[in-house]
Image 1 (cartoon, rainbow over the protein chains, first blue to last red):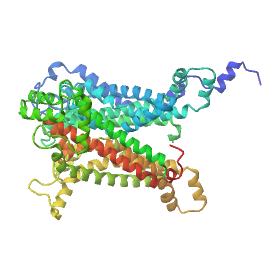
Image 2 (tube, one colour):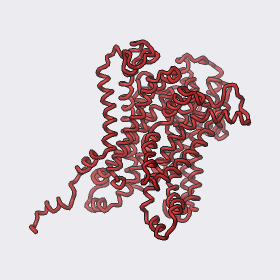
Image 3 (cartoon, each protein chain N blue to C red):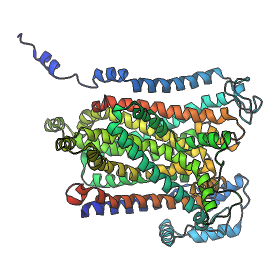
Image 4 (cartoon, chains in turn cyan, orange):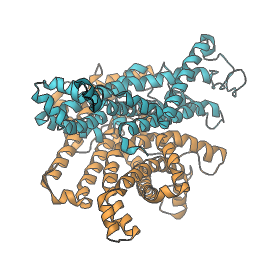
Amino acid sequence: MAILPVEEIEATIRPPVGAPPRFWAVLLRNRKFILGATVFLGLLVLAIVGNLVIGAGARRTGAYLPNLSPGDKTLLGTTSLGQSVAAQWTQALPNSMQVGLIAATIGTVVGGLLGLVSGFFGGKVDAVLRVLIDVFLSVPSLLFLILIASLLKQTSVLSMALIIGLFAWSWPARAVRSQALTLKERPFVNIARLSGMSDIEIVVREILPHMLTWLGANFLNAFISAILAESGLSVLGLGPQRDMTLGVMIYWALSFGALFQNLWWWWLTPVLSLIVLFLSLYLVHLGLDEVGNPRLRR
Amino acid sequence: MTIRYLSERVLIFFATVLISVTIVFFIPRMVPGDPISGVLAKMAAAGGGSSGNAALVEAYKQRFGLDRSLGAQYVSYLRQLAQGDLGYSIAIFPTRVSELIRPALPWTVGLLGVTTIISWLLGSLLGAVVGWSGERSRLLRGIVPIALLLYTTPYYILAIVLVFLFAFHWTIFPLSGAYSAGATPSFTWSFAADVLKHGALPGLSIILVSLGWWFLSMRSLIISEQGQDYILWAEAKGLTRRRIFWAYAVRNALLPQTTGLALSFGHIIGGALITEVIFAYPGLGFLIYNAIKGLDFPVIQGTILLLVVSVATINFVLDLAYPLIDPRIRADSGRS
């Protein structure tokens, strides 16, 4: 057997540092992930393209006759106020996604930091944070959101996203905390500590990379819950007044009795979009889970 | 029973209640202006009638003691809450919030209680059976995607679809309400049948969605129990499969399933409240909805406070019951 240079031996026994390329290869072969991601992106692209195609004139209230069924003049029919349902949808979907994106980012970043601090440093900080996380986990956040939203004089997509984000950190915090607890006992962390790395360095360079899939799954969860919270608040009549979201669409459809006048295209469009959206995101989540946790693969 | 486990639960219960009460107290005060003028101004802007109602403003200022310091207000607020005083409605002024809650409460408790128990039991049972022997049957495996679809659908979205299908398209069930318009609530068979008929669709939408979740989580729990050593050991001992299923796999999987119930209660309540709105079901959710429409902030505040404290209490009771089903917590006190 030929004697190999040290670097080559190291390369054979040690997988490359950083996110292993295998991760993406496995992910892109996962059927659930591919299906979910395709549907999700398809919806988004459809809305964006629709937004570009539909002119401002077609978006006005009263641009069309009221209560037209799909096919006559507009793709998805019109509302009782003569708005094009398709035009509304192209704004509602990206707006709902925007709420989800902002709220989930706040929740994951804040929750992730709290979880890391709590799990990694332990001690008194951990004791306090743990109680706080437990409290916010069990508290029904939608109720507090109702309370806050009913006090705001004017809500927009952004303010919706911010208040939902306020309550979106507890799940990520708990998940990251429990991950940090197991990771900090691993040998590689001890070695890093012995080799003189500071705590911050250990967290950033040794622990964080292991949590990326985990954080990704948590981000998706937060994204789903945020859109859910937004549509729930909007159905209660607490949604943004000027911006269209999927929940706001449902609210107006219900308020105008679309269900009982058989204006099915009006309520079915946002309802179906939410169902498909949640399903696609959940599939992506399952796919990520399977890739991150090989035991789930079968 | 371990003291440590219990004291931790008691601590978390009190922390939850205190934090919730505090949030509910401070949120209205973070909005510029005093709470009552703010609400009245918003009412006036929306064309509401009772703006400038001097008696109302006076009553509120006195009740909240708005001229006093924030700390003093907080203390008196806590004292009033301890006496079960939730304040007055603005829209229907001399009526107390608690008087509005009282008739609505039984409907929500009934609807949620019944549906949660049914869906948890049925979902867990189905999930256990499918997880245990589903791999061999194509029919049973077919349930999984259906459960997934149900679970990812929000309650009120399913409710809208159900109303359209079974109350509008096929007029099997009534569109809304908890009982027929002319009926007076009484303990008679005909009234009970009426209530059941009206509760069927709201109940079904809550049951189906949560059923999906309990099914999926129980199934994956049972599947992960299947490969465990103690199951192999039980098989090697020659126990019947039925015995291993009930006394070993299900017994163990029930523990996280119960924790799941406690954790999801807040979530269930939020969704169920919106479902009530779709059906105009006269529970707390509909009360909140009407209060939102009428800008009746004290009613929203009082109802939400009651719900938050109820959820905390239910979680607390489930936590206390947990050692009864998990002998490990009873036995050792060292671990948290």
